[in-house]
Length: 250
Image (cartoon, one colour):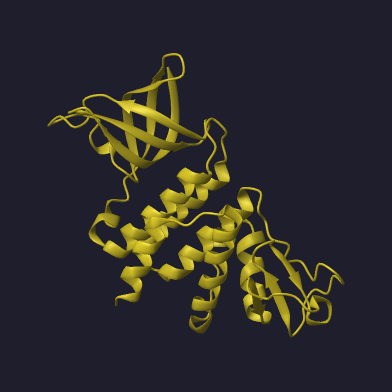
């Protein structure tokens, strides 16, 4: 018998009454769990077999296949279901994690990141685009794609009036060192944008969500983190397109 804490990233129907659950866990990374009978009326495990439920799961392991025995909910994030934009963004978070998370390899910082993002998404006291940027850039930093934001990668200048961020390779050049090159995947950084990127990528998790970003910079920050995530993962996500349609349709 195995007991662990985990967040359901996705639920998939299996036969009439069963489900497969993709759960991001604290000790075993991303795992697939077979949940028997959870679609039956009155099932004791119905609530803990829903997407975005965070719970303590008791599982049996039968030669590589996990089966759900029981679970105790910790946080259900039920508020997401009442807001289409929040639910769409949470679904994007899940799709990215399902693509990048490693089975059986724990990453507690990634689990902490998604739980905090969902928490503040439900509270509604952080700009929704800021939470998106925090998730994208910090996830990259926690999974081996930390951008080099300390200084120019040629002369090591800490700051400059004309810094350019190479979103494809995660590095910076100052205006003196960048030279002639294709700037299609480069983004100009002023001192404020550079500060925001450094804070999100490098600060302690305990202080990460205390960041304050001026409203006029949210769009720029969102463009950078979204493109950086897309280029480094070499992947486009359907849930992101749906989220952007909702935001742009306002």
